[in-house]
Length: 334
Image (cartoon, rainbow, N blue to C red; front, side, top):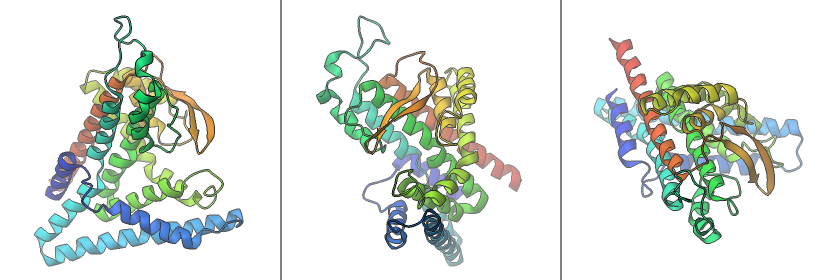
């Protein structure tokens, strides 16, 4: 338990230092190495799916075995060595601070919400909605999402930021906690390998539709329960923060299927309900514009302040999840 407390506190205090090599980068390199050897243009759908299954096995299994050997070897060397290794791996596995930092960078890039005619929820003035004024925020969002951000309005940027931060609560925080609880940091890192695979090849485009099928399906399956738990935790956090937790619960239940992903709408819809904004709508990916289903009701227009509140919700949900997990550890060991 001590190793996880150390790792969690380190994540909250430090995040992901740029100067320190991160294991996800090496997992990404492993994915690209095998992808270059396995992918075949013009292959049959079945053949590409089979190659995609091989890609998953050649990525996830080595990652699991590597961390299993690393932790086992460290404990064989000395119990304190094992504790340090567990703490450091858990620290690099969690993404609470880094996820929230990205949300706050976008918040600061947008600047304070403009006020129109004294109304606190007034729309942006033309001076704050120019291409020049929005350029820093568009650039920041482009580093977080795969959609085209070059022409997004202030409102669309805010919605994109809220969607991204809330969605990643499930796979960046809850899922690593869940799988570490089941099988220690080796299984937690195996999940991170699955999630990295999905983020790299799990696209429904011409190149990856069949080749990335196995990675996408495995990620959907692995994140199924953590995503639903993340929605519940958003509701509890909204209650603690005195936000509209009843609306958060209602919107999550109502709009949980308004997304092509079976998992993303749970935290996203819960956050939309707690904030009283509507997410979704038109978005452009790889040059193709889609009209996405909406989540939430437009009680308020999306404001940059909603980004800040989303970050607070994610911090709160992360802390509740970690404390609940440690509480279960304590009960089992008692």
